[in-house]
Length: 271
Length: 268
Image (spheres, rainbow over the protein chains, first blue to last red):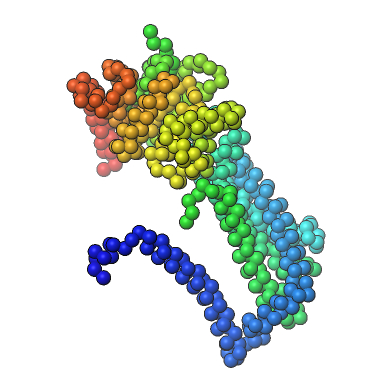
């Protein structure tokens, strides 16, 4: 093709090319995991993979459907979800308030930052025995552990979000004589919102990790309990079902956060 | 007889820095008249911005006196248009323009009326619901100028508002600014380092010295209003005034340069 005819490509051609690339990307994103699963199935059937440790995807799906049919899976997922949501609320809400305060006030930062910095690196799983001692063996201890994990991530990100707001915006508020509460509502909170969402995203990830740990150690329901129980009776397929369910939950949670973010932060250019 | 709106006497500002105290302003005496378009002209780093930030209540003075005369207790004392992009990215154009009024607790219907009036004045009616990331640089500047005017302050402060814009957009916005200002003749203090911009806009021009900033001269701009900036530039009086201002400024620019070089010597 000559140069001049290349230049003559009408403008409308560009979007259709972009669309073709986008469709191609989506196709690859769907096909590649399917291929991996097919490979896994094949390797188990020709006995290269040991079915005792890596049961064939087809048998995992079979266990999956029977667990759904019996209502057992729903029970466990429901129990875990309830604990995660309560933990998110119990940890996220105070973290948001405290993070905004620490971002805005030098004094609050000076008073609380050393405590936060010192306690943040303690592995949350290491304090599970203490949490169970305080909150008992029931739901409260699971909710508390998730809350503690979420608390730090939301707090630290919210504070960073406020501190990252360009000083010029605070100058505008001060110049117009905005009160502390007005600055909070119109500048600090919306300005920190993108990082608050980053904190929520990380918090949700840690929440899923912690809930499984807590349920493995001491629970009568939940996905973690299901996986542990499957180990004790050597039902490897059930363990895999538990893992797959956690992966799906994590993926769904990311989708929900994305959607909420699009509604709450309409002012950010889309990438 | 002109009524004084802003009176500064012996105003001094010293910043403590890691290299010891640095004087930004040294004993500034100045009176800006009510309803006047007052331009601050000076070499970069001479403390123009510091002076205006003190007027805006964003910086404290080290010593000296400052009075801004209030005529209406219900209005904000000042509203500032900043040099940098200061339009809130999380608010739409109309929310940005109404911000000052909202802070003052003005009822919503009145805010809406004022905002739509200023949207029209700056030609952004079609973009009232747009977010800043969807706007060009010029449109963002129009939004921040409209935000300051809509707040209806006693004094408007503008810190090189058009500094970052390209030449054509700047000339266009200067004309729009004068048109809006002409309707209510608020007291304006406007910073620029462009001599042409100073002459086109100002009633009086204050030429500042190199750092620490002091008053070097106050120059009257004799051109009557309404002005036609394009025709004005062809007037021999315009050329003379530019020449005169350049003469005043040249010394200060050279002095600032010399100090910069001197300050660098021990480092070499």
